[in-house]
Structure formats: structure tokens, C-alpha cells
Length: 305
Length: 305
Image 1 (cartoon, rainbow over the protein chains, first blue to last red):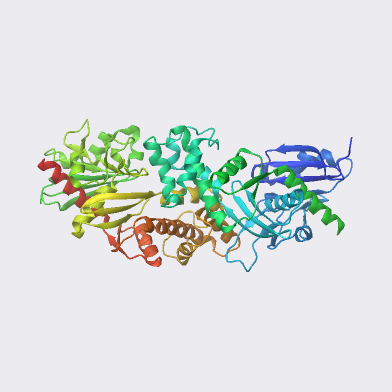
Image 2: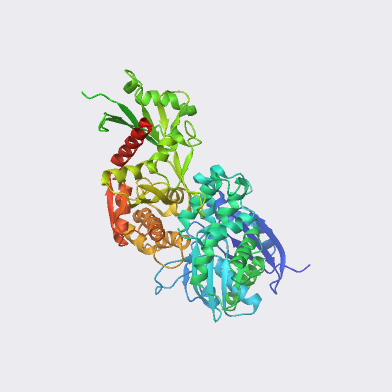
């Protein structure tokens, strides 16, 4: 059996994904845990780390590279942000070693540069963007990374030059769970399925006059009058929100080529369906491949320095 | 002392306001209670009604007219909706008597007509709109009624011909209390004050490219980088949301004359400041006068039939 030569970890707010890889970057083992940074008791990150991948390093303390919210102020150790335009070298230069485990480092996040008229931040998605360029063998792309905080990213000449975040997933969750809209929804448990006609109806609604705050109320009004059935309201809400995100972001990030949508999950599929509905060409990128390829490239750079 | 000849009640989700009026419509007594329909134990509306105004009717069962969410499915009795274009006569025709107290009636709500391409509903604001026309002695107006669910209304020839709702206040509350944005805010208790420079900064942000979902994330990013201090983030969020509402709604309801903003509260003042900042002419309308004048006119119509 091939030996694990390094460990790559995508450590987010909700979940952790760990990969034991060979010398060539191939994935030998994978583990998923619900110990995202929000779920680590008493912020005992070293203990959670040992529980997750300690056995992979029992024989030899192989190098570990981590990305995501583990490097935030609420995580294990706060890694800096690298400003746009950011390259792989900049990320490798900025690796942060955690204080209490040797050979364990965190990739910095990325922020917009001081010249930008707005502020924005990411942690974890930058790794996937560089990984996607590598697996696709391209240097320029517009990427869409759907999620709680969706990212739209412009890569040029192999560097991450601009990006913007939309709070789409979080807005969906707080409205679905805590607003008056939840009273009419008859799909509280499952939520949006992402493939119904009501999702498409929400995408259409997002193009009407009146703005998002008005369209949100239409979820209630259309529910009251049974224009949309209770079972369809979560999908309708999801379509309205994702439709607004895409219409605004496709304006900020005009794409000459297909938008690369990172993720194979139901959410990424919903985004691809929405982009197609709104006549924006899109293509799927495997999230795991993007993550591991990105982390492996940064690890290789960091090692050679 | 002048005798109470009728009782007018504005019975909303959170609060109830009751007015004992004379034969000429003048307010003789007023009472406020926190027994909005959400806060009435076991839906014992008749008991809550007796506690609120029973003594005003002890001598004689004077007529009572109520408006607001008391007429909703969750209220005392479900009053119908009158479709736009709606006049005072239509509202008076549609009065609903409650089953368990004689002489107590509820004003119907208003919905958009079947010809409209969208659905929308209101309960209570329609009374204020007719009241505002009466006190202002006009027949045409654009009104803005700020609140949990803000209403923009077009009145023409003394009738309510079109309106749209924006879920601005509710979006503000759920985002401030339940989203990641709350972590950075250092004004959880007081919330937005509506008059700071950060409110104005939010209004400006709402005009930038990227859309509302992106601007919501900028509350986090600008907070992280201390472009906006923690004490200013609630005002900043409020400015972003109200700015989006006004920019969209001023497009749907172009006003040749000043927009009439109903309400004297801090929220209505914030809307007037926002409208002024965005160069939309606006004027304040007293909410209590609009409510009681509207209810009194409907009561008079209903009586004469």
C-alpha cells in the first residue's frame, strides 16, 4: 500500500474534510467530520486535529496543509490575508504554522487590495480557484463558488485578481427559519430541492421590477393566494435569491467563456440550472479535485522555498 | 365631558391602539396595549377586547371599527380582501362583524386585482392611506408606509389603485439577530439609530454594483476591516436595506409630487432622511391622524348604508 506523504485539510465552519495523499498528490484516504470550527468543543483544535488525522502521522510527522475558516479569528490560529492580485507564490509565502503541532500550516485568506473601492474576504475558496486552474490547465476564468457566502472570482494570468461575495445561502437560511415566510412553508425539513418548477418561477420573479425586498414578500403573497403551493415556497425563495445573485454578479463579472461552477452538490447543480435558465453558459468543476489540487500545489511551493 | 360615541382600533401584530372618539371624530381618549394578535393568550380576542375598551362601552354598546392584522387568518375573524382599485365604499361594504361581540366590525384588507401580474396584500395600511387623503384634502398621492413590511401605495382619484410591499424591516431584524452579521455588531440592544453617518454610508452602498446580497456581505467585510466601527454596523445595514427599498420602489412608483411618509416614529424619520439623501422629495404624515381619520370615514360610510 502506498504511504501517506502529506495531509490536506479543508476545515470550514460546519465540516472538515481531510485527505491523506501520496507523493504525487493522489488521494489515498479521505475523512469527513462534523467538527467544523463552530462545532469544536472549547476551541480544542489540536485535540480535534489529533482525533481526525493523528493516526496518519503516527509513524512520521508528515506535513499538513489546511485551508478555510480554521485560519480565521474564530479558528485555530489567525492567518493573514493576501491582497489581490494574489498568486500561488503569495499564498505559499504567507503560510502560518500553528503553535502546538509541528509541521501543520494554514493557507492565508485573500482580501481585495487597498486600491479597491470596497472590502471583501475569502478563506478556502482561493485554494479551490487555483486548483481549478490547474485541473483545467487554464490561466483565466470566472468562477462561481456557491454556498452560505457565495463567491464570484476573476482569475487572470494565473492570479486571483478580483472577487465578490453574496450572502445568498445565509439569507435563505435566516429567512426560511426566522421570518414570517416560514409559517406558510410546508417543507421545513427538506428545504429547497433545487429542481422544481417553483425554483424556475423564483428565477423569473428575480427579473421583475421592485427589487429583492419586494420579491421576498411575494413569497408570502403568492403563498397566501396559493399561486405557489406550500411545498414549493422554499424552492421559490431559493430561486428568487439565486436569481438575484446571478443577475447582479454576472454584471460584475462578465464572462467571455463559460462560468466555472465549483461543486457537485445539489446546490451547485441548482446554480448550474439557474445559470442555464438565465442564459449564462456554465460548466461544473469537481470541488474535491479543486481543493486537493490547490492545496497540493501550495504545499509543493511552500516546500521548495 | 364629551361622550365617547364610537371606538376605533388599530390592532396589529405587536401592538393595539384604541381611540374613544366623539360624534365629530375627535379623539377623546387613547390607549395602547402590547396585546397585538401575536401576544393574545390562547387567541382569547374577545377577552382582550373587553380588557382594552370594555369600560368605554359599559353605558352603551357604541360602534367599534377595527383594522389591521386582527382581520387576518391569525386574528379574531378573517375579513376578506377588497381588490384594487379599492375605494372607501368598497371597504365599508366589506366590513366583517365579529361573532361574539355585537357592534364590533373589522375593515377588510386590500389585495391587488386579478389583472395584476403579481400578488400583494395589506391590512391596516389601506385605512391610513384613505385617512391621509382626507387630512391632506387630496385625491392623488404616492405614500410610503415604513415598517416590518413597508408598503408603497398609489392613490388616484381617491382610490387605492396599486401598491407593493418590501420586507425591509423584517429582513433587517432576522439578519441582525440570526446571521453572521450580528457577531461584529456592538449595538445589539439599541440597533440602528437612523441618524448616523453610517446610515448614510449604507444608503450610498446600496447604489453600488453587485446587488443587495453582495452589499449585505459588505457589512461583514467593512466591519472586519474597521471601515465601519462595530457601533455603526446596525445603522449601516439599515441604510443598505432602506436604500435598496427606496431605489426599487421609487422606480415602481414615480412621484410627480412629494412622497407622503406615514409615521412620526424614528423609522419614518429615517425614511424621510433616506429619501432626502436620494433626492426624492418627501413629507411626513401623522400616523395617528391618518389611522383615526381613515377609520372614522369608513365608520361613517358603513353607518349611512
